[in-house]
Length: 438
Image (cartoon, rainbow, N blue to C red; front, side, top):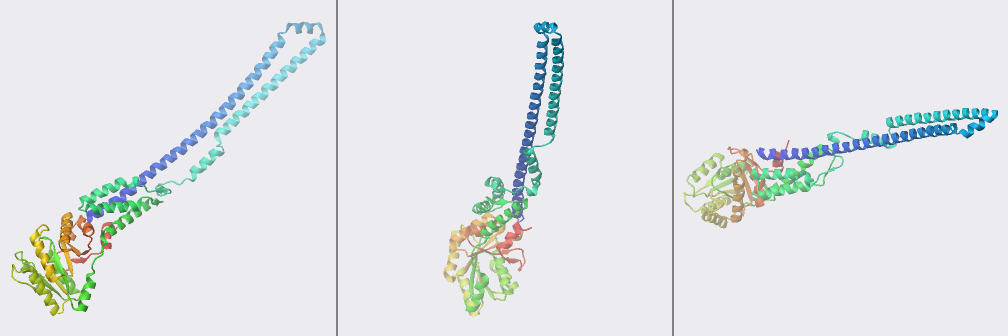
């Protein structure tokens, strides 16, 4: 029952979860790429700085050596100084002593420069292999970052863009499933309002929030204020005035069979119904309802074919009053909502009998057509409640989801089989579980 709706809603929950998950995975990948790029840039900057320092010191050392060498060459090439030194033995010894001192000085300078170069190279290797303070903080931050799909949404907020496409697909699927346009739009808008702006921490949150939003949307559609039949029948029993219920609908929806099911239901509840065979138009209708009444053990009031339907209904009400029966079930001829004459005949029954309730009986398998029929009958006679037949064979579920909301009247019962006991009271929570349950 309602398998198509269940698949559509389940698919939507899965798609929204997958959509948000894929977006978060992309964001995580981008963040990791940015972090890696920053680390590479820091390492390159460190290497460049160290290389520049080493080159500068090497140039400085070479320059020092060059200066010493040119100074020595200049000293060696001065002829005047050589002549003066030859004149005096003391000058000779003094020159020799200066040359030795000069060589010793050059050796010391070169050794110092080589030492500085070695120290600089060691510092460069240390800088290249050991991260600085900034590098350590970056690596530490990377290490502490959570990873994995289930920590993906620590700061994720659902936006309208995240769910627009998926909800549009759902709206189309609902329309294909015979859900009324206004109902499909309300479901989509309600889900969107509930989801947009929600903060999520785990992937499971997405599915939960989406399921809850769909449940709320469907409940808002299905929950419609209406009459409580149990209370009304009990009140009729206490007052002695029977509860008069007129059943309306088009041909072939199972209206006559549904009346017999309702009669059987209330007999089992301890009440005594009576049936009025007011369908005097269709051939075989009186015989059909009489057969059902006999099977369930209920009194039937009938006239000949072609009799006044309002007169039959009136007699049934008088019989119930006289015999203290709590419930009068009035059958009427099936008619298309466009048949003006038959619609007027039904209004005559209303004027004569003044029924307490008018219940529309629709075929769940007809989808949007059932919704349109209900709208027309509500305009003509004022429908108070709805019974959908053949719900057990309804895979789409569009009529069940839409019909009550469109005419703002509750679904009272669902026909779920061919036996007299195959009818169930309709509860919105039950249908929500049918389409969104596990």
